[in-house]
Length: 394
Image (cartoon, rainbow, N blue to C red; front, side, top):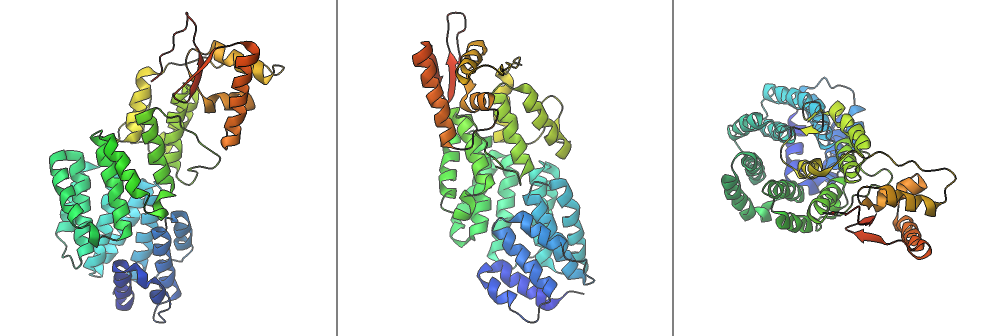
């Protein structure tokens, strides 16, 4: 049996998030139902881990519809945290419940989230069948029409770029009717489409549009896209500070793989790759074999796979001064070294801010003036070029 009041309030909240405070003060709702609404709000604010912890703390409900919402929310949070395999059965369980209590609105919602999981896992056939399921459900709002269009665009972006552009044009006509959450999600899909077609200037334009939405431009997803696009397009080095991306293991390890390959540190790249394989064995196979859809990560991986060679690590003498170690490192290196790699080698820690980079810059200047060494800089790297060692950067 469906909890009619909770169902109606959830639909109202979904269509108009501004009513959240009003929903949370409704005395007809139980404490569990209010916690579920709070969980939806946390996810809207990109606080997925907090939402997951909140919902997991709730006991299993004897009320079918409430239990369906609990499972749906856990699945959504896990998907947003890149735990796609764990998310899928929870969404499917919620769909079974929603069908049993005859709530087509949330059948659509569940299938929409399921489509997102299949998209993230590059399951093209399942994306197609899920869209057909969504098309079979009677739609009651313009927001549902827009969500269906966005799924169709995401699917066509994988199979037919001409049709994808046609659907994209339809979505553009409806942008004024879209919620901020839908616009941000759509911009991510649009960005990924331009990555697949390698229209990197358009990618930059989409990133600039994303900056308008403060809740998104401060997120790990935005920073990830910006870092990898700059690296792919402009050869900018990848810097990782402290706990960056700690809450998003896939993004964290993907960046570490590219960061390590950029520094020609194959051993470290392989360590991060093995972590990705442990989390997503169907996508990250052995020997840096990626089976996912074409994306920023795969393009950066291919860029480095072509040129990288294993380099024997250069040992650092404990008695050597920083200046001696710097000169030895640059002299023995067979390739340009990024600032981050040099800093970590000399100070045995990752750089955390601009002051750390200033320390390295001052040391480079000392080496040039005190040792008379021609240290060159190009595209965020340092190297010593000799007649025997010509350097090719880029």
